[in-house]
Structures are given as structure tokens and as C-alpha cells.
Amino acid sequence: MSDDSRPSPAGARTAAVIPAAGRGVRLGPGAPKALRALNGTPMLIHAVRAMAASRAVSLVIVVAPPDGVAEVKSLLDAHALPERTDFLVVPGGDTRQESVKLGLDALPPDYEIVLVHDAARPLVPVDTVDAVIEAVREGAPAVVPALPLADTVKEVAPAGTPGEPEPVVATPERARLRAVQTPQGFDRATLMRAHETVADDVTDDASMVEQLGERVVVVPGHEEAFKVTRPLDLVLAEAVLARRRLNDGF
Ligand SMILES: Nc1ccn([C@@H]2O[C@H](COP(=O)(O)OP(=O)(O)OP(=O)(O)O)[C@@H](O)[C@H]2O)c(=O)n1
Ligand SMILES: C[C@](O)(CO)[C@H](O)COP(=O)(O)O
Image (tube, rainbow, N blue to C red; front, side):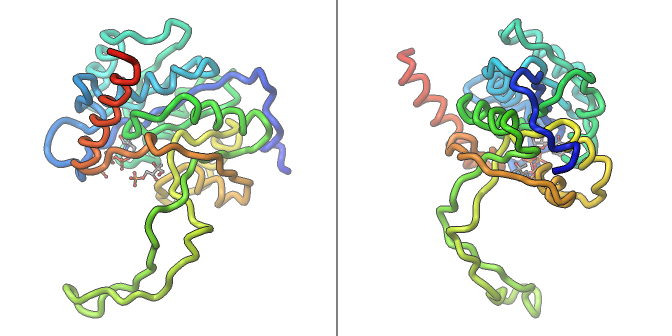
């Protein structure tokens, strides 16, 4: 075990970095994805509330679209958020990885546990957030929530000629595959080292920690922590919110 992966003390302060600077190209034309409404409230505000719902999270750093910092600050001011949580807003970069790094650059020194949570996963339940934090507190340098796959997965090779069917080259054993979600949780020093060391552009932070050779563990994810990526995901997100309203009795 390296110095960076020492168990974090149970009282370690926890911050959440929310990369929210993506355009949402796969969602189609419109405002940046994180600023689009779900049940009348911007997706980003749902994601911020999901992080602040954990009593362990005392700081949320929002990484805003570079031209949207003032708008995000006003949104945070305009929506009810827990008073025990502090908020910072910083401009993001061209890739998710750059945006997360810019969020980490704003992290004050006294935070030992860091969550990285996609604004595009606005509905993650607080129990999932707390399970990730708990696993980091218990000593894992990196923790990802994940679910088993519902579909069989095929590995393909590029089609010989554009437009021709792709040939299947393998069928990985599904029982050993997991679909990874956020928030991903980290011992701060490990995540900082990953972002300072790994140059490849990767889609999640845990894979950078894997590249360092550090241990990454999985805790159970949640079906409501899905990522809003394509238009149908907006329909699903609205349906989840409607079900929550029914269950809450209003
Ligand atoms: N330059 C970027 C790109 C992505 N993200 C954030 O990373 C998260 C996950 O990314 P994804 O869902 O892929 O969002 P987009 O990049 O916006 O989507 P698309 O690829 O469809 O444009 C999102 O909360 C998104 O705002 C970011 O902060 N900065
Ligand atoms: C971090 C992530 O949400 C884990 O599933 C995902 O990798 C983000 O990937 P995307 O390429 O930005 O959709």
C-alpha cells in the first residue's frame, strides 16, 4: 500500500466535484446539458442537491460551462440548498478530464475525501453517495458505484468497408462486467496524483487511478443513478421524479 492509499480517518472532510461543463451533444440542440430542466429545475441543481443530501459532504465544487459561470452562480443562489454545505463555481475545460482537474485545483487543502459526480447523473440516491464515502473512509483509495449489465456485450472489429456489418471478435463473460456510475470516491492524494500523472484522455476518474496501479473497488450502484445522455433519458428522468413525487405524497 502506498502512502497515498492510507485509510482516511472516519472524520475526514469530504468535498464533491461536479463536472457540468459538457455541451450535451448526444442530447441534441439546446442549452448546455447540465442547465436543461427536469421537472422545471435545472439538472445541475438536482445533482448538487444529490451530493449535498449526504451529511458527510460539506463542500460542492461545480465546474460550469466556461461561458456559464455567472449563470450557475445565480442558479445556486436561486434554489434552496442545505446551509451546512459550501459551494464554489469554477469554469470547465474542453474535456471531462480537464474539467475535473480544474475543479480539483479549487479544492481547499483540508478536504481528504473527494467525490467526482457527473451533473448528468442528477438522480443518484443519497444511500449510494454515502456507500461510496463509507468505502473510502474504510481505506479504499478509489471507489466506484456500479451495476451488473442487463445486456450481453460483444467486442467487434472495425468493418472491412465502411457501411458493412462489423465482425464480432469476442463475447466477454457478462458476470464479470459492471456498468460504472458516479459519484466515484477517492482518497484526495490518490486522485490528485492520478490527475497529475495520467495524460491519456479517459472517460472516468477511477480508470486513471487504475493506471497508477492503485486498488479500485466497486460498491453497488443504483438504477436511478443513470446518466442523462440521449433524449430518451430525459423521459426516464422525468418519470423517476414523478414516481418520487407520488411516493412522497405531493
Ligand atoms: N468538457 C466537459 C465535458 C463533459 N463534462 C461533464 O462530464 C459529465 C459526463 O459527461 P457526458 O454525459 O458525456 O456529457 P457531455 O460531454 O455534455 O455529453 P456529450 O458527449 O453528449 O456532448 C457531464 O456532467 C458533463 O457536463 C464537463 O464537465 N466538461
Ligand atoms: C464517469 C462516467 O459517468 C462513468 O460511467 C462516464 O464514464 C462518463 O463518460 P462519458 O463519455 O462522458 O459519457
